[in-house]
View 1: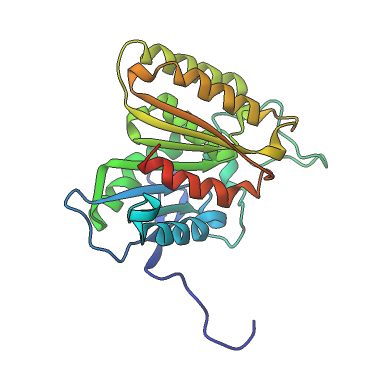
View 2 (view 1 turned 60 degrees about the vertical axis):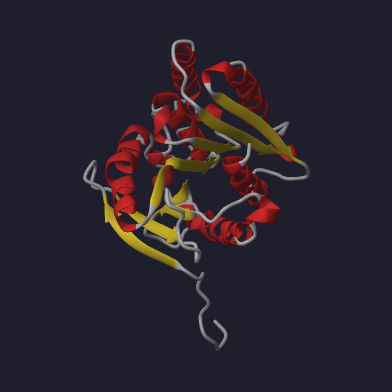
Length: 270
């Protein structure tokens, strides 16, 4: 590295948490606003795949939150959930974000086995029973304004959380969600969620998004995301606000900055 002082993102902190659920270790990253909290506390965004997207989310939130009169985005706490490694997409995410071992995706194209899968339930338990209480004890948080952001496999986990524990968050962002990974299980979870919507109001917001260049991908995730948004929109009377956005000229990875910007605005003003 060239001579000079190393740069850091202002008003951020990180620490390691060892989950009591399965003994897994997580790298928790937090970005705090410089503005004082409102009486009800700060809105909070829980961000998956933090090793790769925390910096982008934190800086985008800091910039947009500095001029809410122009952006409609208010100062918020960003909580990244990552792993104790320098890798952008660590193998551990395959376990935490998937519902079960995929029968169709057990091996890479070169024939080597994919990492262990199927830990979504335990990961959600960690978030709800360990991480959220710790964040609430450390920072002034508005418990009624919590958002979950996930992309790709993280988007699959966001939908799993929505379908199985909808009250966990007020807003869900599922970018390019990997429906194909656990297609049958996520379909069954959606069906149970729809049945629940027919009986009670849940009052949650859901943004699904994908890049234009993902439209013809073999996974069909973009089309599936759009169709899910259409299905959920049918239950507006049950408190569901659902929207799909396609981002022109973007692919599976390049969509992230645009999705992050839209996610912040959607959480405050869908």
